[in-house]
Length: 175
Image (cartoon, rainbow, N blue to C red; front, side):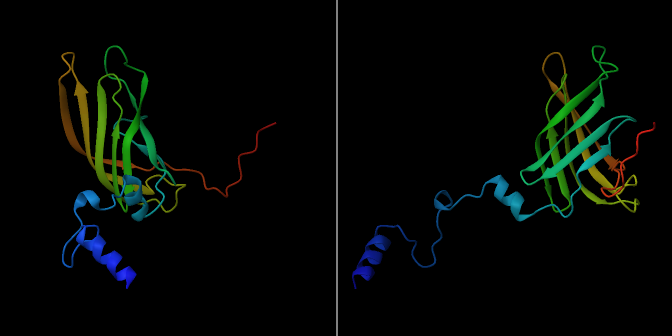
């Protein structure tokens, strides 16, 4: 009987919602971004290097228990950085199911955003190029001298670059 009175008092005080009522969003437990990423793990481990826009440029994606990291390594195209490789590390990235998204840091006034999906490509193993293929929309943002950002979006396809099999013996050094 004492428990019934305590529950009744708490219900009248508004601690428990009445039948048919929902808990206001402010009182509901919030899921953080890492919880949702753990609920929908990547369909496969797509970690590795991929082609990027020009020959010699690359995209690196790393999946681990803490999330997704990576970077874009590209050739500078401004007068001041022409011929130099610039690394744009991810500021945000997710791989959920087959959906891949990332945003890079700004380097020399340029940054990238990608939204797309990965699929299996024609490569039979990870030791062959194009084992995975990322297809989606890449948006390139450019900041001009007046600090105005412009963007250019395009459909892209990035191909996985071959990696040696884990069980292949390392090349023996020549004597």
